[in-house]
Length: 184
Image (cartoon, rainbow, N blue to C red; front, side, top):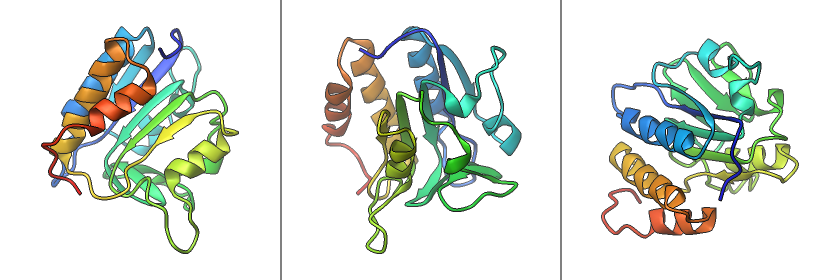
C-alpha cells in the first residue's frame, strides 16, 4: 500500500474537446482516503499548477501526482494555458528540470502518448520524470491515444483497487483489464 501522510495533487483542466473533471475528482477523493493531504484543481492555470500547499510543499513536488489533459511524448497540457514539458520552459509550461521530483512516489500522466517512446530519442515525459526523480518514483504514462471517457473509467478502476488494498501493480493490471475501452 502507498505510504500515507503527506501531500497529493490531482489536476486537469477543462477543454472544449475533453471532459476529465470526473477523473480529477476520483483521484483527489482516493488520495484523501489513502491518508494524504489532497489538493485538486479543475480550473488550471500556470500559477495554480506551479503553486504551493499551505504547509509550504510545492504542489508538483507532492508524494502523489495525478495529471490529466492533452498529452504528447514530450509534454502534458493540464489546462488551456498550463502544462509540464521536458523541453519547453515558458509562461505556460513548467520544465521538468525545474521541479524536484526526488520525493515524488507516484506520478500518473493521463494524456495521449505521455508514455510513448519516440524513435528519435526513445524517451517520453513519463520516463523523463522517472529519471529526474533519481529512479525512485513510479511514473505512468499512456502509450497511445486515450479518450476522456476511458480516462475516467481507468482512474475509477485504478483507484478502487488501491483503496481496496491492492498494490500498485495489481491496480494497474486491474485498470488495464477492462474490455470496454474505446482508446487504442
